Length: 285
Image 1 (cartoon, rainbow, N blue to C red):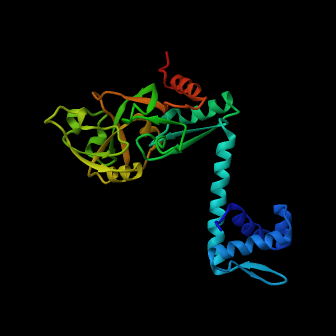
Image 2: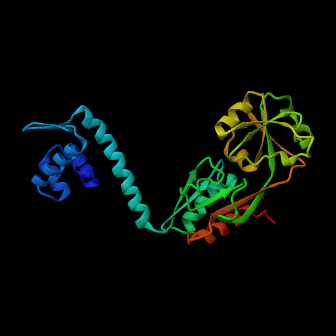
Image 3: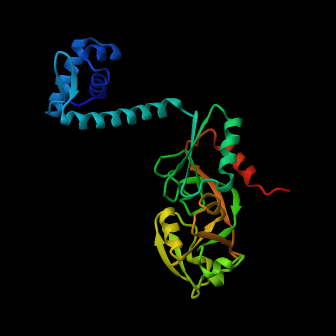
């Protein structure tokens, strides 16, 4: 016999209510059915899960471990059911580093007012598509290269590039920096989600590059003064850190900010998200 969710729900109900009788009431079955279901689960697993007396029920040592996993699996199953049944009443927007930058809070506030029936969730995932390729979100904010054959996109705005430096770096006293300046230094690049590539400099005049794989590691290494980083303005807004300063790069091309989504069956709120974020990125007149 295969283990089913009803086995796990039975175990959790017995422990949480403290008796087979109350578990039966909660589950809407007979007490005999609760006993049979628990016995079946113990036979499937080949272990005893509960200590039972006429007055109390308590999990065994193994039962404690199984109970923890059971609760986790049931929560995952409930989330799956909710995800399938809520349909388009939830919009998940993924991002790799810094969401919508300085527009993040305003986007959330306006969305709640304009679309009260669609719950908005922002999800950070350290992948080039902000979790879209992994199925973790419906839309994603993208600043790095992505597979344009697989995903459709819209440019919602542009962001200036900045140089991230240790606060005690001699260059921190400058108001701005140029690409020719920074190529003398070691540049720290996120290999998976970074927006900085060697193509910013002419071939033969490119800086030394070191790699990292996460925003927190990127900031921590820059704070040591060993290397510097180049990043969009959104990072400046979202990751102000003690020991780090940001200076604009005068001659670096801006970074396009895109919303991306699956080409097939896009979320119905896609156009609304694109419209709102484009409005927020639009320069004031």
